[in-house]
Amino acid sequence: MESHDPGRPSKKSQVSAKNTGGATPHDPGRTTYVYEFADFRLDPEATPAYRLLLNGQPHKIQDKTFTLLRVLVENHERELSNEELIGYVWKDEPAARANPASYAKRLHTQVRLLRKRVSGLIMAKKGGGCYYLNAPVNVIPRRQTPPPPPVPDLGFEQWVVHSRESRGIKLFLCAGVALSLLYSAAYFWHPPLLDPLFGIAIGRALSLIQLGIIIVALCVSFWVFDRRVKDFPASPEADAELMRISGYTDWDKWGRAKAGARSSLKRFSRYWKLLLVAWVCLYLLLSLPTSEASAPQAANDLRIPEWARSIASTVCNNCNSWMIALCFVVLDHPTVIRRRGPSAGRTQPDSDNPTGRHDADNGQETSLARLSRRILVGGLFAVILFAAIEFLLVAPAHTNLFGPSWKPEVVFGPSWAPGNVLWAADFFSGIVGAVTLALFVGRIQSKFLGPSTWLPLAFFFYAAIQSLYLAIKTDAHWTPSWGPAMIEMALILKCLLYLYVAWLFKSGRLLFYLVKVRTVYERVNIDWHDFLAHLNRER
Image (cartoon, rainbow, N blue to C red; front, side, top):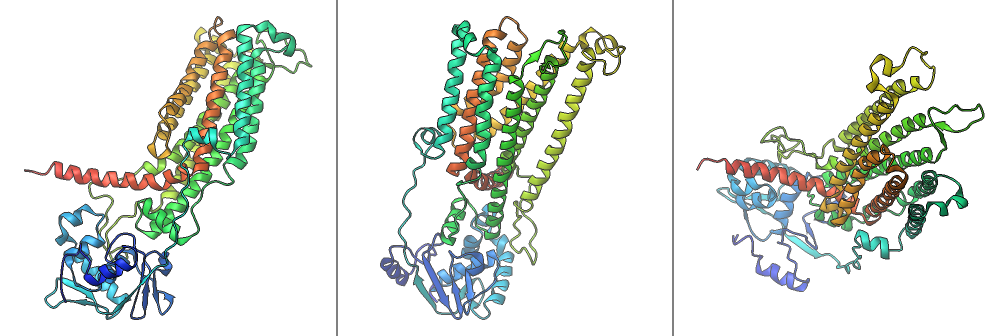
C-alpha cells in the first residue's frame, strides 16, 4: 500500500469530496459521511449507542477505541503510522504531541481492544509501525439538511427593551418602580403633599408598594424560571453539534454534563424563589406599624415593638444572605477543579480505562448536592443561633422574660445596652450580606454570562447599599429624608437583578455557562501545569 502525507486526502477522496460539497472523509473534523465495511456501519454523528452497528444492531465500543476505528475507516485507502494514529486519537493531550513514543503502549492496547470488536479487519504492516483497515469501505454521503435560521442573540438590554418574552412582568416591574419612585420624590420635595392622601409614614407606604411588587415577582417566578426556558435539543444531530461547541469529546461525559446542568438550573431556581420569599418577609415587616420601645402598649394594640421588628428584619436579611450564598455555590461549583498534584487529571491506564484519562466530571452532581446540603443545614443553624443570641440580649430589657434581675447592660456593662446590641447585629448582618452579594456578583461577571460592564457595577452598588442604609438608619438627621431614598434604590436594583436572572434562564446563557465553563477551567488547569513544567525545566 502507498503511504503519503496524512494531511492530504487521496485523489479518489478528492473526487468524492468535489461531488459532495467539499468535505472529505479523511477530514478528522466534523464529517457528513456514513461508512459501511464488512458487516459494520459507522456513523460518527450518531449517539453513542448507535454510532457502530453490526448487522443492523448496536455494537458497544469504548470512546477511544471508536476514535481509533473512525480514523482507520476514514483513511481506509492507506496505512497509518503509529505517530499518525497517536496524533489523531490523543490530539487533545499536549504530551502526546510532544512525545508520541510514550503513548505507543496505549495505542497497542487500543488496537488489541479494537481487534476484539472488529475481528480480522485491523491489519499491521510487516515489520510493524503501521496499521490499516483490511476491508473495502462504502462511503455514503449523509443527506444535507439546510442550516436552521439564525437566532438573534439579544443581550440583556435588548431583551428587556425589544423582546416580547416575559413582557408582562417587565412592564409590571417598571410600573411599580415608577410609582414607588414618584412617591419617594414627592415626599422628598414636598412631604405634606402626601399626608392627606395616605396618612401613613413614608417608610410604611414605600414598604407596602414594594411588598406588592415583590409578591407579584415571586408568583410570576414559577412561570418565568420553570416554563419555556432553554433546554438541550432532542435531535441527535443538534445534540452532537452542541457537544462539539461545548468542548466535549466523550459522550458519557457530555451526558453527565447535561444532567448536571439541568439539576443546577433547578437548584438555582429553587434558591432564587426562596430569596424572593425572604424579600417578601422583609418588606412585610417594614410595612407593619410599630410602637416605641418605651411606650406602654394596650391589650388591643396590634402594633409590634420596634425592637422585635428589628430582630425579625435581621433574621430576614440573614436569610437573604443565606440564599444568595446558595446561588453563588451553584454558579461557582463548575469552576472548582480539584487537583491533588502535578499528575492530577490523569490516571494510570487499566483494562477499563485504557486511555489513562481522569474523568473530572465524575461525581460532580453528587458533590454539588453534598455542598448545598451542608450550606442549607449550616445556614439554618447560623440564622437560628444569631436570632436567639440577639433575642436573649435585647428582650430582657423590654420584658420580664427572665425576671427583673437579668439585664445585659447590668450583667455585662453599659456597652451591652439593647440599642447597641441591635446596632451591632444590624452591622454584622449587613457586612455578611454585602460580602455574599459581592461574591455572587463577582461570579456573574463571567463573560460566559454576558453582562455589560455597567451591570456588575450596579450590583456592586447594591451590595454597598446595605452598609449605607445602616449608617443612615442610625443617624436621626439623615433617616427621615435619605432612608426612603436608600429603600428606593434597593428596590430598583432588586428588580434589575431579577430581570437579569430571568434573562439568564430565558436566553440559555445560564445553561451554556454550566456546561461550558468546566471544560474551560479543566483546560486552563492542564495547560498551566504543562506550562509550569516547561517553565521550570533546566536549560
